[in-house]
Amino acid sequence: MTGAEPAPVVEPVETRPEPFGARLAAAMDEHGPLCVGIDPHAALLRAWGLPDDVDGLREFSLRVVDALGGRVAAFKPQSAFYERHGSRGLAVLEEVIAAARAAGPGGGSGSGTGSTGTLTIVDAKRGDIGSTMGAYAQAFLADGSPLAGDALTVSPYLGFGSLEPAVELAAATGRGLFVLCLTSNKEGFEVQHAVQRAAGAPGSGDRADGGHDGVSVAALMAAHAAVLNAGAEPMGSVGLVVGATIGDAVGATGTDLVAVNGPLLAPGVGAQGAGERELATTFGDARRNVLASSSRAVLAAGPDPEALVSAARAAAREATQALRD
Ligand SMILES: O=c1ccn([C@@H]2O[C@H](COP(=O)(O)O)[C@@H](O)[C@H]2O)c(=O)[nH]1
Image 1 (cartoon, rainbow, N blue to C red):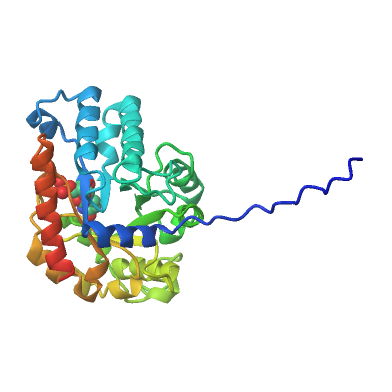
Image 2 (image 1 turned 180 degrees about the horizontal axis):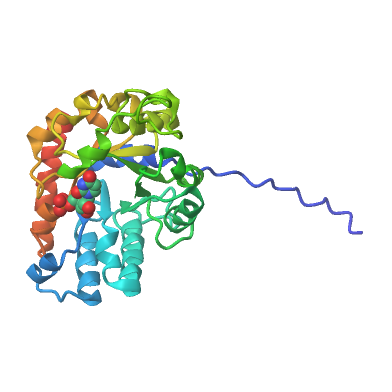
């Protein structure tokens, strides 16, 4: 016995990660409501003088992160363009996510939560039965997973409830989700505008949920997100994908975007034809929560880094005028 006082027991301080919704809101305030998509199309690689192989993919992607890291609210790497190059392509996606996390003033935390680098929304549109969805969640939303960015796009078309493992893990790790709601492609309406029939109604089938008679699929997806985001400030972390090209579909489907209280990722800006006017008119009173997304229209300005910065600045200015002024 030395007579020394026993060392005090230090209780671990639970550090809850700052939620994605709050981190995105701050990034949009700082840089403007623009997300730059990283979509290394074969044609873009060629236009940049790069080979359409893994080396070209890596060079292209890291040049975009180098030029625009710390200058835009978020990056949205499109997983398909990495998957197309097999396992080595996915390794490049991992590198891009890590580089974005470290980009910009202060660098990142390395955990993906509380990151001060540029946010990444991994556009992989995953969706499956709940038990498999759990594995996707581990891959794209777990701390320490190399494919985990700050948020993931997910497809609710196996039923919103099938997304539960992703919803839970995203909340636990301070990450976000963007649930497909009204997509920018013209074919989306046949699913998203479809109207639910109550159980027992003709054509409803035995397994229909009786509570949604007359509600469009898009409105129902938005209503589910609204429940998850209720009370969050400045906004929740379960966002929706609502294309900037959809015209009057928000009203036509009765989708309440204001009630969602979450970020609205709006692809379709630039190459798909939407611009300032569409951004200003499509989202109604929810427009302050819109993150406009543009890939090819910005990337086509490269490979000169200054030209990329100018193109991103111009797109961010337009998005700010349409959505914030
Ligand atoms: O409804 C949707 C959902 C996702 N996307 C994706 O966004 C980009 C758009 O690229 P652009 O070059 O700006 O057209 C691409 O990765 C899509 O898969 C979308 O367009 N619409």
